[in-house]
Structure formats: structure tokens, C-alpha cells
Image (cartoon, rainbow, N blue to C red; front, side, top):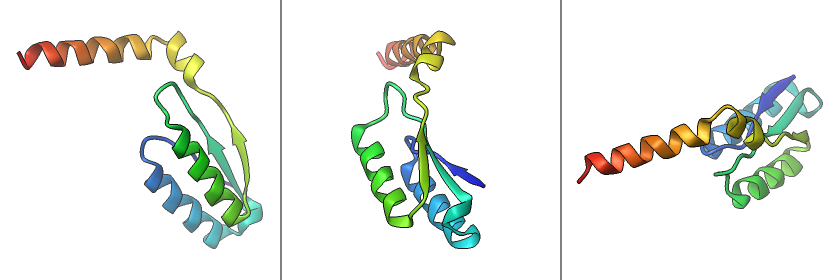
Length: 88
């Protein structure tokens, strides 16, 4: 079973999905969509279109709540704020 996800680097995930499907067969590939707060709706929509085209099964796992619970978004905001302050 090969896994791929739609993320900010969707083009990489698309290539991996296509190669895995070609190499392993669609019955052995599972697409895993892992959207989070900053994921675009278009990335998920396009990923679903590709999965349908490839004929692979998919699951959706929203990782946003986990990232929030771990403080990732707070650290991201802090890093961006610090970076912007450094540019002044």
C-alpha cells in the first residue's frame, strides 16, 4: 500500500500518486488527504479529481486540530511576527 497526501506541495503528492498507481496498481494505493487550517480548498478538490482519475481509494484525515493542540499554529504566528519585525 502506498500513501500520499495533499499538502502545500501538492504537485509532489500528485507525482507520487501517479507513480505509485502505475508501479503497484490502483488496488494497492491509498490516497490520504490531510488538510489543515492553511490548506486550500482547491488542493483538496484537485487531489480528489486526481484520485478519481487514477481510480484509487482515499481517506480524509483533518490534521488541523492536532496541529493546534500541539501549538504549531501559535509557533508559526510567532515566527512570522518575529520575521516581520526583523525586516523593519
